[in-house]
Image (tube, rainbow over all chains, first blue to last red):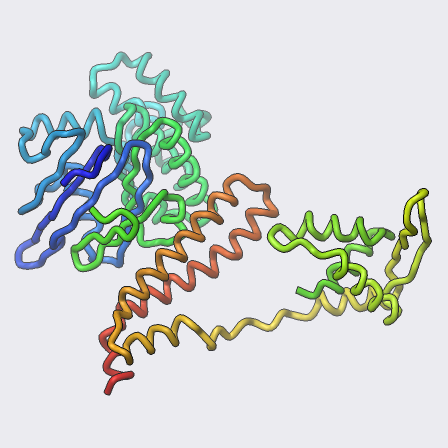
Length: 228
Length: 174
């Protein structure tokens, strides 16, 4: 079943690592421009759910539909292209290429999709301005603070105009002031660009930036407001 | 909150009318619960009786008479003592939520559902406060943060209790 108007839907996902079940009948859906928090204790399966939704991990059973197409019917190359052009990613840390400057990092997804350096960097700077890090363009990731680095990572995730951003504990390594600013900027930018955000977190204060939340417990996703 | 001490504190910067005091109080501290005029005048009468304020002048401006109040030395000492006295931390031992969880277990109802519903309600309020914080000024942000941290603490308790329900069921239903 695909809830009306949803962009990305998962139904009855099962995934085991060896004999350990990570997902046990999880379902999920998100609409364009919606911010959904995926919550749950450590080991509940929330990161596995995110990896399945993003096409990084293939579930053992169940269906994932993105914009009307089932992910399982796509080739590896098609799924890679989907991740590059339609999805953006923000992780807890270690996601920026250390050898590149911040602006080159933000421009990277555009360059990989064939954009010319000048055009890619111009778009990158627009997003960096939005995330209040445009003055860091020439610096390398090691030369900026954790909070600034996460804003650069958010700018990179948004630069290729994705339809969905997957954020896995995006503020987990930041102090609360920096973390909140990153969340504010991420959710504001995503909402105004009609980008859906799947926000994996175990923190209620982070989840409070979402429009609704889904709880994963023992590999099952529970959506109290919108049962799917 | 001690309304008397707060109004006294506001008077330290200079004499004010009752209406002016109410307006300043509401602006700074009364976002959700503005003061009633009656509260202001009854509090000022008490402060006056106790010698903590005095009437600095009476104006009418063609309308009804308005008293202008000023803080006394005794009032300033009283505010200082109140500010220096730490607030008693809430012990949070009389928890309705805990009672509900135990009763649900005792009566064979789903304590997990109860905790989930509560969790959802807490998050709903946290969303509203986060939104208000985002749109508000620094004072608004601080007030909302105070509430958000308390709600977050409740949520952590809800999570922990959910993880311990099996053990708790054995304790309450031996």
